[in-house]
Amino acid sequence: MRGRLAQREIGSQLGAHIERSLRMARQLEDQAPAGTVRIPTDGRSVQDITAHVLRIAAW
Image (cartoon, rainbow, N blue to C red; front, top):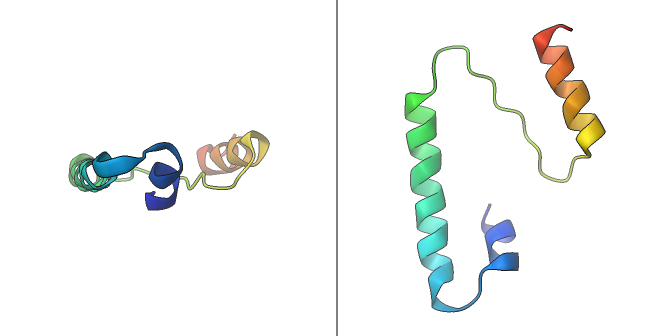
């Protein structure tokens, strides 16, 4: 996450963006219903992510 933000944010606001992203990740984790599945997407193709989703959904 830090790497992605650093590629698109410059200057003094990078730290604020990182903190906000971390805060939102914690909030999403706390509010996720039981059984929620997170699928990593970094460095993966759309086809690979789609195949992963289909496997998890048992389609």
